[in-house]
Image (tube, rainbow, N blue to C red):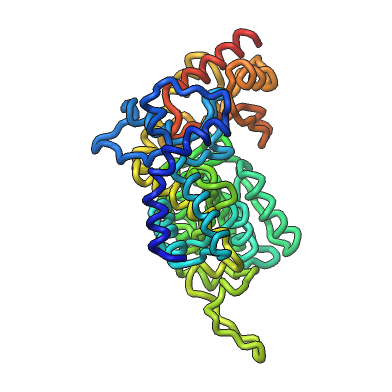
Length: 443
């Protein structure tokens, strides 16, 4: 791909977006009405950088953020933990790249894609660009690690009972195939120290790996940095399922101290659906066996006679075949969008919405499952109403309050999870709380 074309396309997003945004909004949601014509005129244009001092109470700027997305107001979308919408900038980049790909009949693989987009990914994860591999989703990255670690029969992997099924099954499959031992603990919702204590109690001389989530299904923020120190002390491989963290908050995999970290591009990073990122620490590459290899895994030096080949000295070795370049160009645009706002600003905003929601739930008398301590919860909040069935609560929130939500059945919680991201605001919090009040009054 011509780098000049790529840059022209990126610069041209604003001009084309204004003209196409209204049509896209109409196509996605024919009934959506935009009350403010001034906002409608700029909808889809590149989001400007925020003011130097941005806080969650800056309503005008966060309204600009909201109008950078084609998300519906009716129903209100509060399920980013399930799937994240993409901003117009990402959508238009994706469409332009698809057009260019078919015009050239090319993969569009180039240094621009592998370097520019991965550089942004490195800024979102806190690592170097060459430590990142493109995947289709977090689950693919999890499987690369679960199957690539040098584990043998009897080796132990410590994990939790709150892992997403996509993470759990990969390790269970390895257990069935190779006889590894999976040991679990149920995370405490009361303190990070207790969770470290529970992990320590499971360590034996056969413990080879930790497999934990950064943000759990119920929205708990696990003490990943402290777990990293524990892993380093005992010489244990450390893998983190990061599907729910990057994009919601700043992430620093070096501070975490993990050997590998897998995330989804289409959740909090707001990228096109079918994108993911896998971080593998440089000094771990040769220990993390690449089970699937191909032309994109190798340096190009290959002998059919001897079977000799050399893997690329970067995480690209896990990208064994053709990558969907338009999708990852779109992911790059989404990451640029978040980086322009500032991940610290995004996290402060998301966390403030979550705190306001938790305060409201407490006033209503709801039972909050997510940890209450501000350092131990994310912007995904899981709760239930004692004396009100999950079915009734879900029905009221979906049908009367007109919300897109996620039921949490894993671990027997039988609860509801609400997720807040950059495009949400305090009015959204109140709309959800109003629905909870109605459910309690009618349940």
